[in-house]
Length: 327
Ligand SMILES: Nc1nc2c(ncn2[C@@H]2O[C@H](COP(=O)(O)OP(=O)(O)OP(=O)(O)O)[C@@H](O)[C@H]2O)c(=O)[nH]1
Image 1: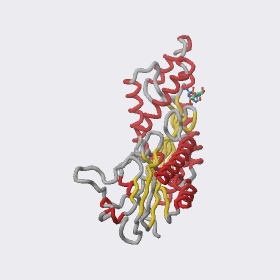
Image 2: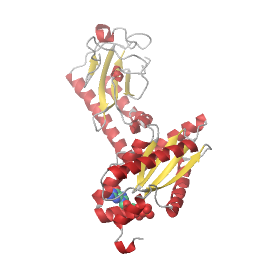
Image 3: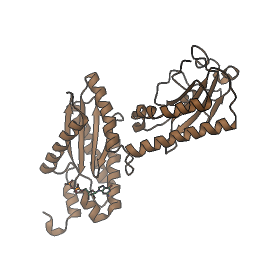
Image 4: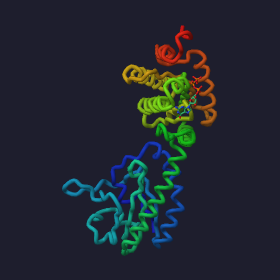
């Protein structure tokens, strides 16, 4: 039996996070073990996890009152598609795949967003009792736990952006894609200035808040297709796929403005300022190499100016250093 690309649940409008979208392929591989288990337990020819970031070749089906035909929050079971009017005209029921039975259970991430669906498919109609439904829900829970582990390993808990591991994995994918297409890539390496002083003077919780503020500004300022990560401590990086030097410089100026605006409008006892290293590459390099080079340039930048928001660095010093050390 040929496996269809999509499940009916995929008609849902879903807001899966950017990071998960890019990590979808590794998630798909992780689910292989689970779908093999589902096939064996239910004795169906096809079990798969469909991820919502995939293409949607069929239009969203709607009832007259505007509700989506498959907008069920929980399990969707269709014991026989031939007898189910929701499948009328649906390509799943026709053609080579001839789906007669479908059961799907949503897989959700921590914030409740649906990431995908654990699907069972048969070319024969079949009954699906309460025990079967409970078992399918349990298997979907297992998938959620796997995702949670993946999230723990790749997302920074404090700022909710990718950590070093997540950033490197996502950036490797983006870099190899750009290499294949012959497109340039830019990478920025950021380090907050005098961050230790924020901790020492205002407390660790305030330091945490500064890190959250900065990561939020980064996430807002760059494009959705750019990859923003926290490498550790007060160090961050942004990878801009398909971006040459002039465009990257525009992006950096945009960030400068956003940080200035933050420092002016958000009332904190200190200002955010940073040093940055920028590398561009259309040659074949690895992410590790790009990061090493951008890190070295960031240190140069820190030595030279130590700030990227006119007046903010001086204001930060003013706030943080005892009067006798100010000049
Ligand atoms: N609040 C908070 N502090 C952290 C976290 N991770 C690392 N730090 C602290 O960040 C500080 C980083 O120190 P430095 O690299 O010297 O930072 P800096 O004062 O900005 O110095 P320069 O980088 O030279 O400008 C250390 O004191 C760490 O303890 C975190 O998650 N939260």
